[in-house]
Image (cartoon, rainbow, N blue to C red; front, side, top):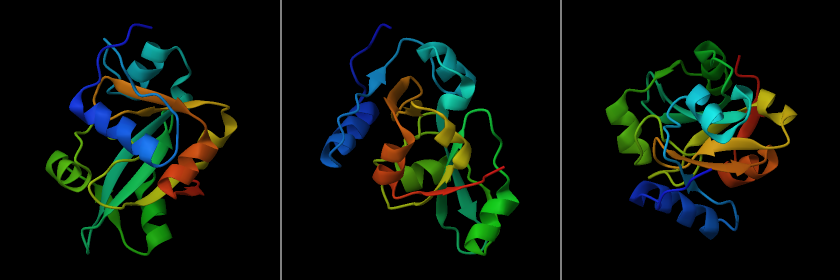
Amino acid sequence: MEFKKLSPSAKKVQDTLKTLGFSHQVMELPHTTRSASDAAKAVGCKVGQIAKSLIFKTKNTHKPILVIASGSNRVNEKKIGNLINEPVEKADADFVRQKTGFSIGGVPPVGHLEKLMTFIDEDLMQYKEIWAAGGSPNAVFKLNVLDLVKMTDGRVVCIK
């Protein structure tokens, strides 16, 4: 794999990982990792090993919710809403940037502007290693699910 110099967004994620005590290395790739299939192709793994960070918004209180889903799964919004006792909807690009500091397609699991309630797809547990977005549409980093749970303080749930 060929690497590029880290963009400011990817560097922010790298710095956050280091601050949290993790040694994972953010890599900026020459090809897009914006979608789960693009990311899987770029790093040579299964689509299910891509931990895609999706931001939802609660419909009444407008709070951001981070759902880290296996790349092969679709999030059941009703299920997430039931977990927090409030309906949720997919957040638009402006809300995502305002709450996380990152653009859709590069939202990482850490380094957001504010603390996010986080849910992690239980289907990621089957993989020894997974890949998460690193802050830009070309940046990723490799990790395992236990580290993902620790770094995000996320709750492992069924999201399908």
